[in-house]
Length: 150
Image (cartoon, rainbow, N blue to C red; front, side):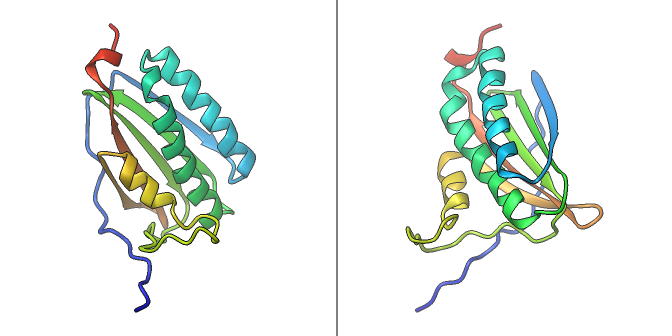
């Protein structure tokens, strides 16, 4: 039986009271994904939640790589918000195509498991269409209370 990729139903990202927030624009290029990963690691140290770095960098990499691969001619925006005990990351791109989860893991195919990783590492994730044939894909990660410093 052949299983095909499926897209979750669109839904808005959760709202939260932002303790910290940053938005960055980037070109749809692999080098930009690397740059944003480095920026995220620096931000989480500055926001005093460094224990979230490995998970956040992996999720951000997957979401940004999907945007670069599937919306290669559009500008991309990355937004990170920390508050209410969570870190919310969001990637906005110019493609209206919903993100799709590949139900089977094919270790021979590059990029076949990105959203499965996002789903496994986050406490929630989703997407929503935006105006002008664009979309936002987002993920939420918990930030343990011990990581938060006033």
